[in-house]
Image (cartoon, rainbow, N blue to C red; front, side):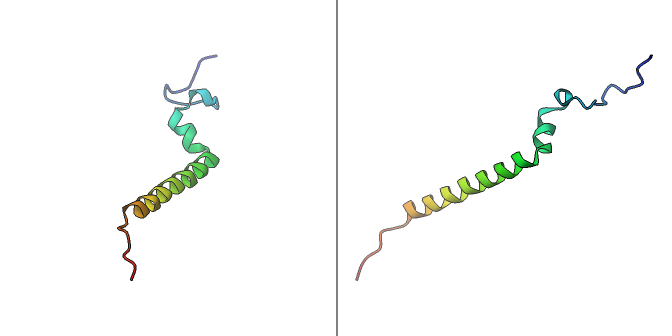
Length: 59
């Protein structure tokens, strides 16, 4: 039986898929990464704002 596959066609074998494709197909990983990245950026931004504020002069 001859093979009628094109050279760039992928089987259902996940090991043949590129790493980026496997990461983008995993919706749970993308959701967790989005929440973690958002939390780290906003927490870092908030800490930077707090540490860079000048000291307030009390009346």
